Image (cartoon, rainbow, N blue to C red; front, side, top):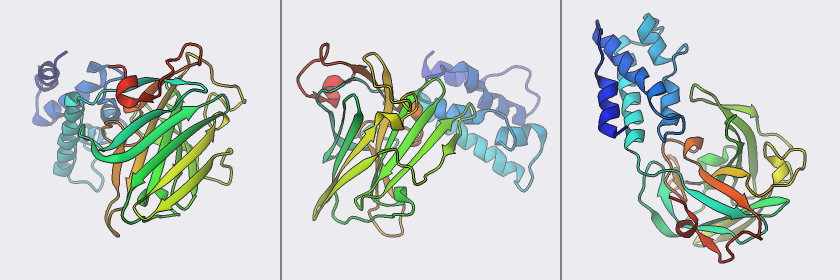
Length: 302
């Protein structure tokens, strides 16, 4: 269905008896109308009616400490987020990752929610063997600002790995130039929320990071055992044909007291937790792999 058709379907209704009902129907129409894997799905799932969601408040008149007009305005704002996803041209990047083969390399950074690349000197890479995944980020930075308590509020590299896409179960790993490591296990539910199932603790599952600080930037190389990821906790090795969904995220603290800048190696909409936009990597063995080193543009399948 075209974008215009989707918007029309979300706008025109029969039997509406009030502006609030029309607003609610438009808000909730996207949930079943758009495909499960649509780029806007992360925002669409958040329209599911459950207390104390805005649709629940408006439908049943349960406003609590909220003014009715503020609830209506929030619904309009969330509709605008969904329609931004309908217009989104970033798409999902697809590539092949060779077990024991050369890395896939990305250059540049895309600000969250943008399809325009910046910072051409930034280099990201991912490779794997039968035991580990290795992720490298090399970034220019005039001044390194870290936060060892909440790593994502300072200069850091976030990594998200989903090995069970049907269950929407994924591991988050964050490292910073000080060598500090955070890891947690999350699940994305049908209401569009992500829940931390296993919070950060002493157990780091053998995850290790090597850091290099320079006057003009820093480099982080993180090694993640496959057994740290769901579906591989028994020590079973990766096999050709299996699929790894992943996203790499840089948080950049440019000025003290200001929000960090969030960038990715490929376009990503909404949030680093938006696994509906994660890169889809199909694993292959060296026998069937193409031997030249891959780049993002060479390996991506449109």
